[in-house]
Image 1: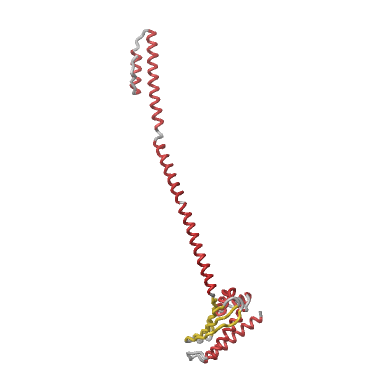
Image 2: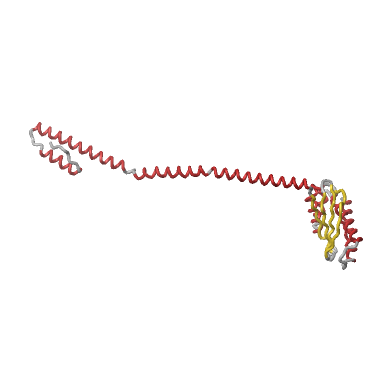
Length: 253
């Protein structure tokens, strides 16, 4: 761990020395060869040292809450599994734009190449950012494009299956609605026709009562004939009862 800290301090010293030399040529619009060599050397040193950090070292440096260190290590963490160990520098370019100098480096790693951009601000005499970007080969890009295409097709297929399932449920919704309407239609007449049995019972009772009166008249006539009395009063009684009940028997006794 101490060796890592010493390495980091050495890197900071190199960067500080590079910045100090850059300040002397601050007024110039172009970067001299000596300045460019210093910038390139500082970038290469950073790339080499950072690629050798373990996960524990990275977390230790992140705990320092330094803006530049945090940006560099977060960028490295996002690509280190795809790149692997550092191998060599492929190419480097230095560009100056006013007070800002950018060192663009193409570095070869164990698994792939990466573009590393190191930026410094001459007015602040400090490095402001350093980012990593993996260079994907044509085969890698085709593979990624194929995976994205397959994922898109799979999602569309699943959505179509889901929509087909939902549409298939519509027929059951219609059946449920029709069954409910049919049940309501069947129950409505039953509720309206409920008093009908009472009327039928009343009519049957009236008919039975009329038959009973006729039977009483016949029996009364028989009794009158047996006792040699007139049956008019019995007929009158029967007629009066029939009128009260609204019936008129067809025969007279």
